[in-house]
Length: 292
Image 1: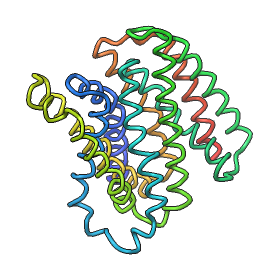
Image 2 (image 1 turned 90 degrees about the horizontal axis):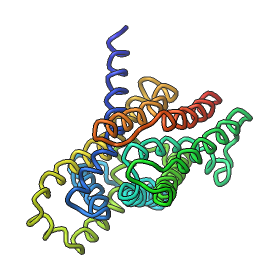
Image 3 (image 1 turned 180 degrees about the horizontal axis):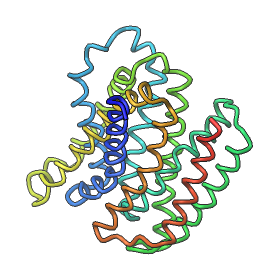
Image 4 (image 1 turned 30 degrees about the vertical axis):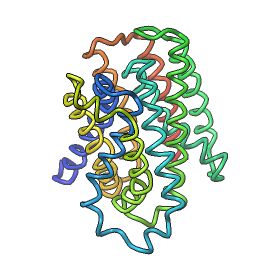
């Protein structure tokens, strides 16, 4: 194996661990802060971290793409951040991570319905298999959640993946001429200040001063923001450039497995039924990627 291949695999594993760990990091953030505060913190810290690194990318030409970047910022960052953290007050982090694997499914659906992307018969079969397996996960309930909570929390995660689907298609159709740092910086420059304003309109400062686990939660959210939001997008773009889209897209299969393992480590209930359903979703995702 060449040095380049080794580096690609290192990046692949790092991304799988980072994104797969996002859900347990959100859960630890909720130990002290509300779901909306964790979401606002995540976006705020990602923006503030990336700003000095990417400020040289600001230009008039870059800001001419602000409409598409706003779509990416709201649908691919801000809104999903709030939906995911709210969902984790209702369902386990493991189940949240499993449902997040629907992103490629809704990327294809939104591409088909809104952006006129051509699809194959195998991809359509993949969509149906993924959605059927998702229904199985939502009806499962179990662990700390009731069936009603599972449906509501799962619905929030599904809405977030729909947002991701729109965001990916916006990037492909409107922002593909920009590099990853410029795209991410522009999107976060639009939603980041909004997240900061919202955060300090809550009792965040009071919680930070008085809650015994505040610094504990803040540290986990900082890891989530810096590695799971700001840096990972840039590194993912490098992986696409060096190893190709098919290899990079395969990280989708590893993320729910990492999320499941973290959930089990944290005492969440993960059964063979969960594993069977996630296998169904990933089979659908494989069919979608296979046809590309």
